[in-house]
Amino acid sequence: MREINLILKRFFDVVASLIAIALFMIIPVFIIVPIVIRLTSKGPALFRQKRIGINCKSYTMYKFRTMIVERYDKSGNEIMSENRITKVGKFLRNTSLDELPQLFNILNGTMSIVGPRPMLDYQAPRCEGEEVRRFEMRPGITGLAQVKGRNNISWPKRIKYDIEYVKRFNILLDIKIILETVLIVLKRDGTGVKSEYRGVDRFSMHYVPNNENEILEDGKEEI
Image (cartoon, rainbow, N blue to C red; front, side, top):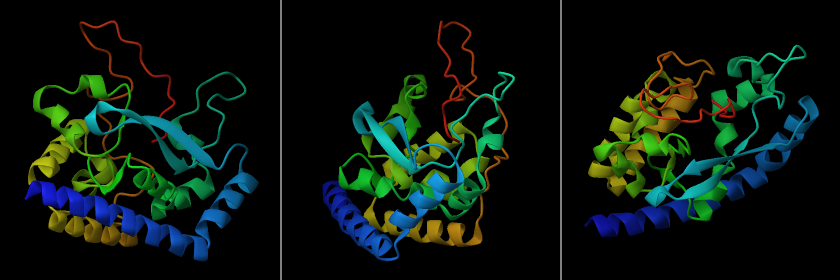
């Protein structure tokens, strides 16, 4: 039964992505948004970042750029991520339009509409025990973790929801999550640029392991 659900899931992903891309080409979001981004801030319209997907394979995830390119001010001080978000970027995040380019990730088979949250490359090695099960499925534009708390829950809790999704997965659950996601976006619930969760856990960028010589990321993550 699970194999049938996986086949249905992939079929649904491809068909839904093609329909969505066609609709947004007609509107035409894929033309207007990049132009507005380029006119209002310096830098490319697309943001590319390495993420870890199914079977722990690395892939390039695409989003519309929502931050200024500069990471340091004139004095050489690092600019806080929240202060780098542009006005256009804030709107794109609040409406989730920044994630539209991920439809092409779905078409090339690296992502799904629903799945575990895409994980950054430095986070994947920190998964322990059952947590690695999240890599049994393609990462999703939305997922159980996103509808349960989005930016307002810790990474360990997000991963628990990811594992729950992998265990419970069926096509009806996907449809339920998609409908809940639409309601969340319409209500703009949890879409703000600031996260209520401020703790540092082992999946955080600034986490320092006790017994590891680990090179920390230098702030390249786009929150």
